[in-house]
Image (cartoon, rainbow, N blue to C red):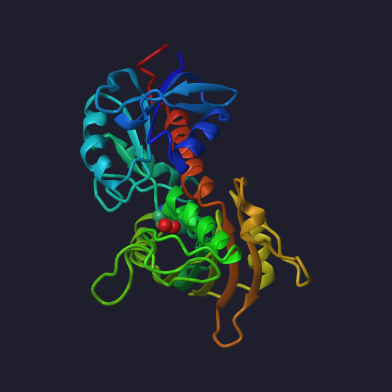
Length: 342
Ligand code: 2RA
């Protein structure tokens, strides 16, 4: 008996990636529904080598679904995730709406896969923020080996993290600069083309942005509440792929060589680390890949038991769609019953 899925937000950046990755997964799937807002009803989206017509979120019967993968924004999720769960589906939500809810597991399978069993409380599992996911994938094996005290992270986040309109904005601004057109007025208050912006999401009391707070709070929930994280999250003019510079302080000694060997053997990680031209991964090279790539591993000469490293991952894949499908695989592999045979 196979599973039936709904992809809610099927026409967005992450929704289309979830459809692609789900079509390639090993889950026994009987039926997939592409669910979208009323304005997208009837629009066709790709699912493997077929297409699906989008159906209306407002009228769709979610009792037909075993698992709903959501990427429709926090406001929609706040209203619809409980309704979908009540209809009997397990919701795996990409928004930040439920991440810090104590009755909702926040899961990165390489780090805390067993937490999925907590879905029974509200019928909802939360997918962490993209910049958190790739970081905790890198941190987990290191923490298990040498106990992390503190992480200082600077991010270099591509515009796709802000959605399709931000990608259009970068394209228009870049083209506008080369063709001497006026920079078309858009939602951005700042020019992103050939620029970097130290501001993602809203500012909070104390001066951090919410993106920076997410990296701190989510890491404590997923990995270990004793790990201190301080972040500076920056938007950069790339289309897909988030990069992070990590400075990691440990309780115990861990050499760069030992860390490199350990990371090479760790799930979800690809180490590319040679001290030569091209001996590292850049965001352009991670696009479409599943792995979290780690380069530039070296000891911090200014502080004992501290390592620096560079971490790159496709924010639409491991940072969102892939992690979401991997959570679904964890559920299925742990015996979630399929109640809606096709
Ligand atoms: C961003 N992490 O990059 C945020 C939301 N995806 O914009």
